[in-house]
Length: 108
Image (cartoon, rainbow, N blue to C red; front, side, top):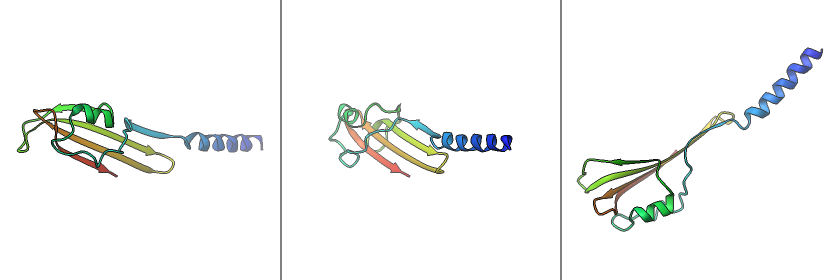
């Protein structure tokens, strides 16, 4: 009987411990201004002020729109208990003048 009670206690503790189990990748960023981005208007300083430092900065081959650099913001949250995942990705492209020349926001 004591062994069965101990197993039940361990099971209950394990359930409560896993209730907080989650995986996070990237840094959560404020999406308040995602619809305020305009090509040719915002510069790198404004984007950094709105969204923080990007997860990745990458030089890219010049595109037809003149984009030369891409900033990537990614945040993924996975809850093991609820088996749910949320991913937010913001890609901001800059031209040689340091202004936004294109952007994409995706959320799942």
